[in-house]
Image (spheres, helix red, strand yellow):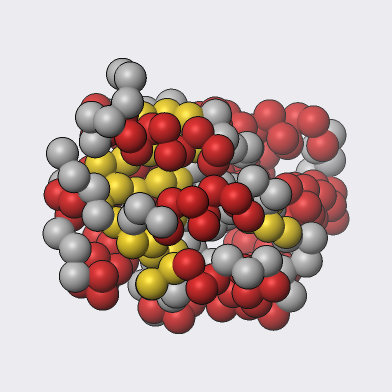
Length: 235
């Protein structure tokens, strides 16, 4: 088969967000403590990973609920505080940086495929790509904040495909999440490649629709995976 376009997630495969996830967990552990629920950080991390494994779409809040249930009022207060904490990321993606291998892989992919950003991100991450001289390789340069639609909505992917003028059958979604990247892309008829990046490397597919066509350990293995899908490389 022939692939014409690659839709590429940013968080995980291209952008290292470890600092942001660490700040989320630290904030929520502190918020739980302020509400009278003391939780050791490692225990909270384990609850987050358990939620991720079952493909809970909001693993951090699912972890919070596991410690405060059935107290909805306490849960609501923590959620409100967490959302306020998260808004700071919209204006300052603190600690986020471009993964070194992306500086080589993105230009290489652009030599063979039309590239599109397919990411749930604030527009403030785009300057990071510009500074790394990567944004120019993407024909579709919009993130969810600018699109006003986010994954896993099928409309998110349709907008990108329509913008590229490429049918779903000739496109592949490359991302780190089974629920937000693989599942909706497969529903539309796209091929899928999963990149095993923390924290979502622990996700387990709940249905056959969540199983990617290829799974790779890092972004550097994506070109080979695409070659296999196209029948140009070993299976």
